[in-house]
Length: 316
Image (cartoon, rainbow, N blue to C red):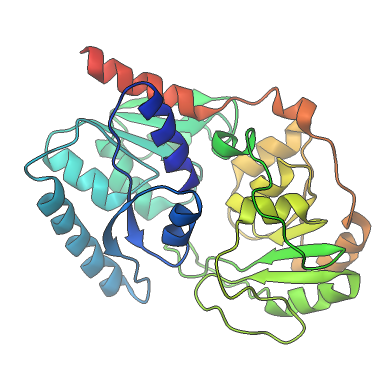
């Protein structure tokens, strides 16, 4: 959602009309409200089974057709939205897709072959993307997606959960790429010996003994900026933390994560550990914030790249 909002605001400054769409989801809609962005809700998220995914995907495609059938946008931009890409392709409209992982095979197989432009960090090898029968143009940039909002990020919300503050993010175990299960609840409890632990769940906002489990929306970018340590499996919040100087521990899994490796090579405070070794590493890293502003200057923001591509379609 943050990426889409950043792109939308850039395009509006260039005189374009933009409609932001999202599924009904416990994370995206509250975030849109927080960012004061009007969004069109199309379909919902139901990852309970392959059947529910397929059913809701088909329903969402039909909803796109009903909403935009008589007023078709000129360009479709998404972060790997299978349903949006399919409808745009069927309506003969150009597609710009952004990519930040190399392992989302199901999504890549359904989106990359029909995309006109694929915008991805140069950390992801181009040959990895071309495996998916890519016919469009791959546009690489020397940075990560999160630069779209982190460079201008200000702590919009001040949280008072106590200090030292450790943030743990639950693994996205219902994603199509999640072939293994990593339960971080017990690990989070073990980390309470080093500070106050905020546990960010994904599906259920339930109380967990010894952990701080916010019931409502939490601005993750603001939270990790104020945190003394972040622990997760390498997703967006990991990079939001490291790009703001907060040490981030990635629990080792079988997933290949070239974007995180890219940031490690650039000197950002991201550290990998087996789950059993995390407490010991956490003890060393808590509170060891780093000044990463000089490093940020060497990273590119992908938003202007995407806006420039849109202008190419306008001029053709």
